Picture 1: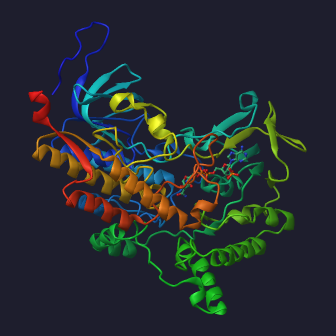
Picture 2 (picture 1 turned 180 degrees about the vertical axis):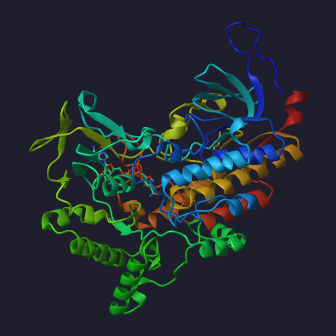
Picture 3 (picture 1 turned 180 degrees about the horizontal axis):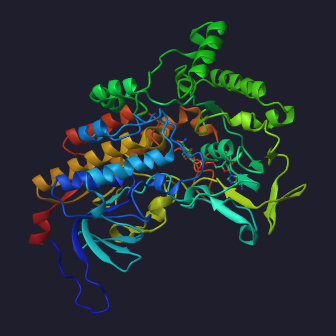
Length: 550
Ligand code: NAP
């Protein structure tokens, strides 16, 4: 349905919709599919040129998902999971992007998106009880509902180092990587950032570049991925059992299939502990992470495991000073997101790869020629930023989202993000977020979360349709109760004890604190299910009729 809302010649008429969807990552793509099934009238937008979200942008060498590919994929469509075949246990970015494209083609999703389009504002019109949405193309839309599938990691962050604009070499950002191949051969390359992204770049570019200088401030703990090709037998077995695999994922803390260990660290003898650590280390992937049940609660256990990893670094890295600098200290292991690598530490044994320890030799500025530290200027042809994101809240705060009574999202989230279930905010009626900042978000499989969240949103919309309701928003008491749960759980985990994007400490001026739900995806799902099954008592609804009569 299209209605003409503006008679003025200069202002384009607003197109009337049921739903506006922002984002063409896995959340936005599934929302498009779901809402089409429901017969809704919607339009989706994406700043990038195509589907894939973070996998569209992150084309840097070595980009790979460290969740298993059979887990990190949609479970809603039997056709998709039977027709698509993963080649590796941990898929690389080109394969994940190909998967997103396959889904978009197979389900004919692309036609519902306006690509290369930035949504600039979403403003609640109280009188019409609609979201007024504008884009950078000058288009206007009016929608009953807004679904922000903008992702937790979509606003890249440059380092706060002076002189970036002076650099005369080639500056590359991992999160906005060029589409054409880049040659590092014979080049002097600098890399700032050693989180998951930086680690993946080091192990790839370190083997290609003439010389690689890795500027490391905080070392990360990283575990061996031990990736492997999937055999046809394994694939066939997975395809036969997808139903069970998805069900297990939906009932697991991390939204994927991984054994849940109930064994506390000190419940077994020291030699057994060592053996378990060795075994899970050799097994690779995320096995090590799940070796014991209490590593995020028991500091002594955590430190012992951290020591084990430090001893592995020492075994691999030949140069003693480099090995020492690579050993993370001063924060609990797994309190920064653990990385999975393929011979990351081995890369530092190459004579062409140099670690610059920024804790001892701080970066002072970026110059025309390269990077100046406190003790030298390092000349570079290429400089790569792998310096992370304004995560969790950055995407929504980046545009003009204004709810009831002129309430801006920036003000509502001044002290940090708040919401009910990470899905809805008081004062922002009919606006939903998927994989929101107060859900399990980055702590679980984002495809599983996105599917769940879209299904939950669809349930609310169905409920409103059935009961002829015009608006929905969570009650203040519900938001408070949820945030009390989130904050209480946050105090019980060592995750709060590291400076990371998880706690907002990587961005200057951002409120600090762990605002994600740390109780696990399965518990989160229980809370969301209960919020619907109890008749949505934690929400305020406005009936359609009431306003008509007024
Ligand atoms: P990140 O974890 O936030 O790491 C950013 C890095 O940049 C840190 O090492 C940080 O050091 C460094 N940095 C920032 N400003 C700096 C400065 N001025 N000087 C020196 N160093 C500076 O970001 P990311 O590596 O992009 O990862 C973000 C998230 O994306 C991951 O946690 C993960 O969830 C996701 N990801 C996943 C995969 C995967 O599945 N394998 C791969 C890549 C990314 P400090 O810590 O000292 O600030």
